[in-house]
Image (cartoon, rainbow, N blue to C red; front, side, top):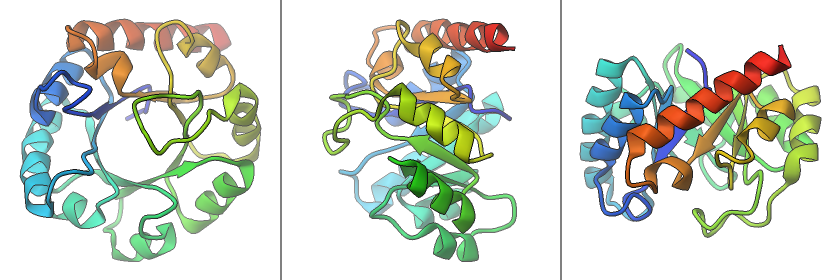
Length: 211
């Protein structure tokens, strides 16, 4: 399973649609990975949402990742967790996680990517690649040069997130990303499935050109 199109659910950006509905439409459009991200929900509400999204991804054959919360990811039977700099350290999460469990890490520098790889991450995500309004705490974009530098420094799958859309996705793939993670570019559209389908087609075409 690859990381070509990695869709992060967000009910506010998703025009009020639920996490499970956004996930259902995204996988219908070909999303390879769904990440459940909601910093407002209680642990119980996030767990309930995770169970529902887990069913959608199982039926579609997509990977399911929970943002931040290793406990919720494990309890809901998710494929993995995505950890930021302020979350549980990767090395400690790896001690708790079962074999085959995916741990992704947000990074902003080559040094952070190298550290994440050494600690046991399965993929790294440059966050944010471009400046974005979807994540209020993201900070300024790191740019395509940083993406290329990380690509050269670590052998792990590399995902780009932040400000990516149909216009710039080809440049992101050309800079070395194995996949792109998006919020607004898919869940913020009226037709989530169509937006996912279009973006994934652009990713596949860009990868074919790079080969």
